[in-house]
Every structure is written in structure tokens, then in C-alpha cells.
Image (cartoon, rainbow, N blue to C red; front, side, top):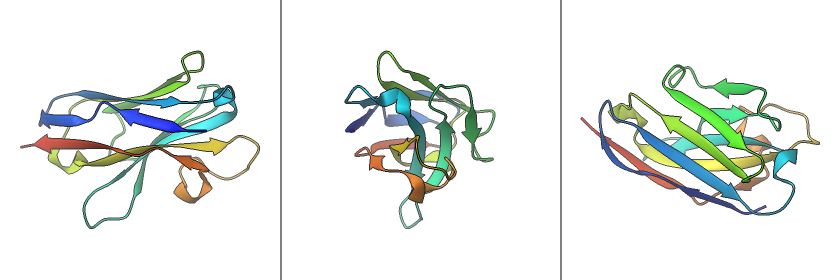
Length: 125
């Protein structure tokens, strides 16, 4: 699976962005999908994840109520709608795919099999 993230940019605090992650291959629906982010000097951290069918979603406490993850299994794409952005949301955002045959948690970055290249999100105050 190859993942291509896009949609990052510069936005003022309180603004919105929508990230997209397009996946190659015909088995997209067999992967749980996640978004992670990494700010300079910090560890990569979990942001949001969605199950294979899209029926279950998970969020970090820091983004709950502001971000929404969704997926389109026909278009092989996962989205992250980010509203009410804050300067502390500034980071490189990565999408990732986790094989559905594995156990483990979608919140755990070590469980993921494939990663996209990242897209920069900068929120100015």
C-alpha cells in the first residue's frame, strides 16, 4: 500500500483545513487508517483513527470535538477535517495504514504497517 497525504498549509488560529490521504491498491478497505502528527522536537503522536468499515472512530483528547476522521472505501481515501485549529496543532501530519488481520490498537503507532510522506500544517496565532 502506498499512501499520499495532501491538504496541509498555513491557516490562522480558529480556521479549518481538510487533509486527504489517497491509498493505492485494491485492498484499502482491509486496513484500519490513522492520522498521526509530529511537531519539531517531539515524538510522533496519535491524532485520530478509523476502522476498516468506518464504523468506529477514535480521537486523541486534544482534538476531540474539533477534528473528524472519515473514509471513502470507493475512492481509497481517508480524510481528516480539522476545525477550530490552534497554534499547538502545528505539526507534520502523517497518515498510516494498519492491516486488519492484526490485533492491537489503532491508537498505537507501532501497530501500523504503511506510512505516507507527511503534510505540513502550520497554525498562526
